[in-house]
Image: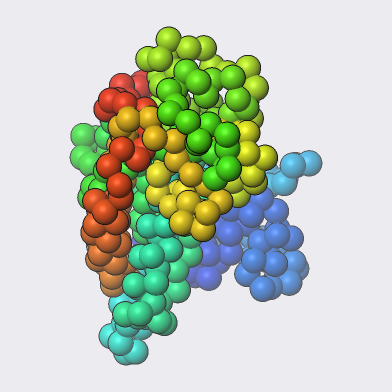
Length: 346
């Protein structure tokens, strides 16, 4: 059977493609049915209809769930584009008919999720309370491909030095993603507010023997931490927990012994609440630019445009706040920048 554009247009429905994409995202028909608020037989029927139409299996069922066949993978990739455009159309129609409405899906990491995005969300809700905002936390090698495929509207994260050389950033030399830098983030060496080393003039070497929380080894922040110890002529501490969980790290530091290296913005509210305190080690350690990534090939939804404006406003507040902090607060003396890496960003 030879397919034509007209024959596919007559038979296929957006509804079927949405169900199919959800099955693969969920990893099982049961979880997809729960996510879509449908019955499992209803989802199974849709998959059977699609496979019957194409005359070939689209899913491989195994002990660990379902995955796409080679044909199913092609259908999935095109479905993502259709679904992204359908969401754009939905948002534009709602914005026109109701004023400010729509749905924006944002991917983020630890460096932007603690203060910047919550503040931008508050500003967005003041302007457009009907906009639905969905946040997805992940690693860069998960979020950037999802942004390129249209699964996300924006990604807010540190701007990697080599982000624009990866496969997901361009196709046939044409850029798939663009970035708008928002502000420069610094890092803090921090501990519980009653840590004994807060009471005396402290050098970085004096903190080495204490327990440390360091970022996981697959993260940009860990490379910064490793370089920090190397610059000081010190090995990585023996007593280490690896974690990117803000709440876990803060809880560990309440023993008033554990020390952590964290983005300054991530600890802001907890420092103001008296739970944490930065060590004054003579200067600020630069983490890099925090930016807003977006598609270079798709028109943004009205909701995404509003959120980008709110991110800019929140970033201006962040810069003003940082300028009011007492001089000397921050991480070790000097201004260290990460070297570009050939590894995939995380």
